[in-house]
Length: 177
Image 1 (cartoon, rainbow, N blue to C red):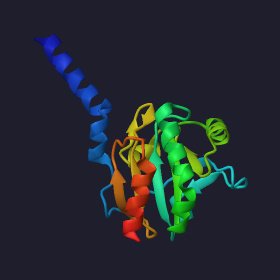
Image 2: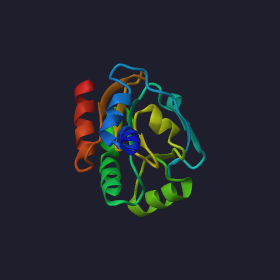
Image 3: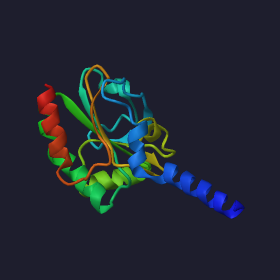
Image 4: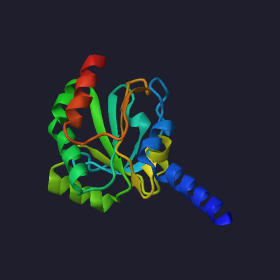
């Protein structure tokens, strides 16, 4: 009987801590103030800046997407989708940032090799990812948040599919303006 109880407790622990669908329960809601962040980042177009905060984007729309890992197939597809639409997002006063647990060197290589033209931030310990309900150790879950110019969550996508996701986000942004 004791072994059965231990197995049940372990199963519950694993379900709660490693189920991507449960990230939904902890993600900020539409209308909530976006949690602040202070992360190292890389943007090949901004050589002098290495630390980014939410306040850096005040007065602009911000597309903040979390992704598991540089250079993986789905993450590359999603990143390139946003990169191809960067100018379209700019027309709507919007910036894009991607957040993963990857380090700066990985982000630099990823941006260079895959022509990523926006900021990628390093959330090594998942602290910011966790604030956004997007942390499934040791990676970020694939969630996206549209943050309004006044710093509120305007829309969110939980456990998204990377194909055509950038277009989905752009279409929602167009309706918000």
